[in-house]
Image (cartoon, rainbow, N blue to C red; front, side, top):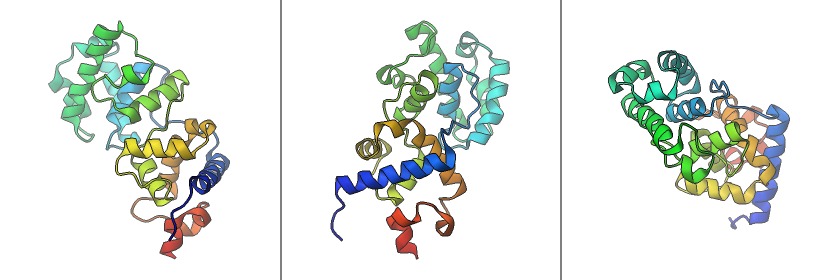
Length: 219
């Protein structure tokens, strides 16, 4: 099979974005977000390899116990671990949460930084988390957050075959129009939960079926 041209990938990516917009509109994060950028950083940090639903159960408890960044920065790790026990990698995440609070206080005077370079200095914060925080909290779209859903679906669509989320993001930035960078992560996350389900994709009802090479092979 001949290698697909960049022009062809861009045309398919445009069709994906159009259909996701028709299905979901301006989709938003499903994490509980009260407008506080620090709360969003922590929620997205905690969501790695854990469902948003699980995170939404623990964050209200976390903020009730530690209502300020200062309070969280002074927390004992074992106490934070107890709150986060129901989510994956809770011990590592508890350490990151406390360290993140301390760094925001000490290095950024209590204000969540608003650039990719500064955000990714925070413990436990990579490009995915930083992209979501910039997108949602600061309305600054520098890239596309590539989580497990976005990675899996865009690989099925053959919009990237890169081996890592970061390399996948850079592929996607080349094929998706910049106006689609902001909503596409949240849209594909919902699509991955509802239609392109990891264990059993619902190709028979998928509105991307005709432009998805993987779906065509499965028929």
